[in-house]
Image 1 (cartoon, helix red, strand yellow):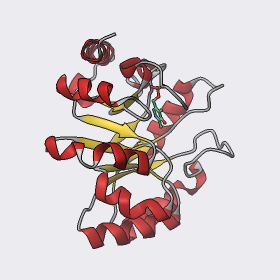
Image 2 (spheres, helix red, strand yellow):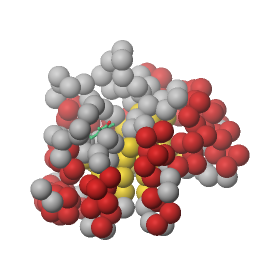
Image 3 (cartoon, protein in one colour):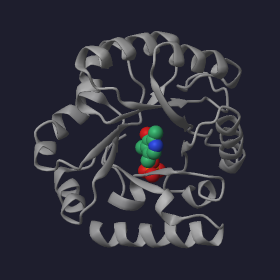
Image 4 (cartoon, protein in one colour):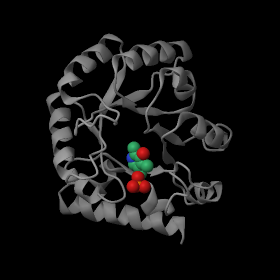
Length: 221
Ligand SMILES: *Cc1c(COP(=O)(O)O)cnc(C)c1O
């Protein structure tokens, strides 16, 4: 299996899907989710010219990218996994976008750290659209209050992100998230993974987060 080939195929599928629904394919960004993938595969993706990656754990991402990214000035790294306040310093130093902002404590911690490092990173708010107990994300009824707090702290909120419950039709959740984003004038939507990105694009995805369809199965969870 060739990573370069997979990336090319994914761009083609994204393009076809976007065009079929009257959207500009360039408005849909492909995040290569590299969590737990071996270094050779990352190198292959970089060699193929890919520059946008997603990681779900701060320490793992740091170990992998801290030195590597020096060679790629145009690299962009998105944090797509839960962020604990004690990892905020490392996260702000390493990532270019935090997609999983989901609670007041994190708003104040991120605002403080971004100011300190003078790195005002764009953020997405993760919404727990399925209101699942174990899952990160703000519940929809608390979104307005959290956004207000973000504004008060001058955080750059660019959009919303969600991970639908595994046992429900993802399109329902994508549509719901799109509606919330429109209500709050937020332009970016991080929705869709390997199995369902073609359902997310018609509903307005501007970022799709693709792991296994790009790199193959992960070695461990
Ligand atoms: C792992 C992960 C993905 C990628 O999932 P695939 O099904 O491998 O494409 C996307 N988003 C988040 C938040 C993830 O943790």
